[in-house]
Length: 214
Length: 207
Image (cartoon, rainbow over the protein chains, first blue to last red):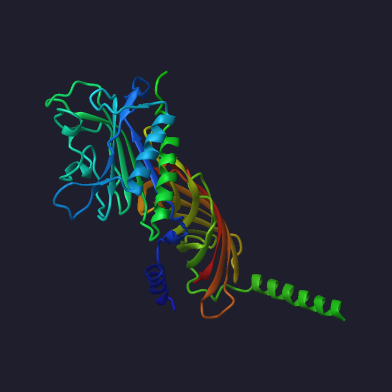
């Protein structure tokens, strides 16, 4: 018996699972809403914003940029972001040249990646991502804060860019606010839309610093 | 009639207890050593996770320097998980995440035990102090993501327990209650683990 004790010890140690993982089935299936901003930016100094009428689609299959334009989904997404910006006190303008802020919205349709970045988010490398030339004669992008989250299928990505400087190819375009909305796609399109609407409202609700000056 | 029967049962139990306490300690595997393998129930007290669980094990081995005093080694591990409702989590000053989450705290302390055996018989009540290091792994599962951080700290744990060797083959039973404290610190998804403490009990086999 004495000789068996160390064996019993070793056996018990080896056969028992050390860590009990939590049950992720208990998590709700609602979307995750992530927001991040440049804390050196004073959002009260902005007044107007411009938003394109299309949502860029990021996927793995296209050979050219694809946009959602005039669809119920894209209209709802754009309308909800516009509503959030207007409730924060910003004024929508149709003149891109004079706008203080640009709001670009993308939808990640069918790709699935797990990657972590510091200052250059993965979407910067997407070939058809919003061209910085879209906003003027800019020389590149600049995120003054770390982007550390990956995405999955069904993610909406919105970014506010600072357009107040005079564009120049030697200057980079500063992204001052980022919002991800991510979750698993549901077979019900309307349910997805409902989730996205709720999530856009939540994005503005958890970003109280987005307030225009009076 | 019923009260007579109850009286007889109580008397028999008392006699058995006295006989057990006064009996010589011939039934454990080694008179100079002790070994325990236990299931553990843990009640954590910290801001990261405070839900009780029985997902843990404890292992002890020690040697008697005198008939009363032993020195030994221990290792145990325990997991406590807790669901946290959907809320805005402020990961940093500039980053916020709205999600629900499953938090998990895994603790693995190990080190040395100093033990004082109060009675040397088939019933062996004791008090002990465990000192050592604790490895703690804090993690949070949310949406499809996981954030985690591990930490090391100093560990101390007073314990009171009893070993009972009713059988001649050296296998006995072990029961103990403990308190523990460690100096681990970590932060995951805006929630901090800071000097966690625990209460709990252990039930298992003694050799």
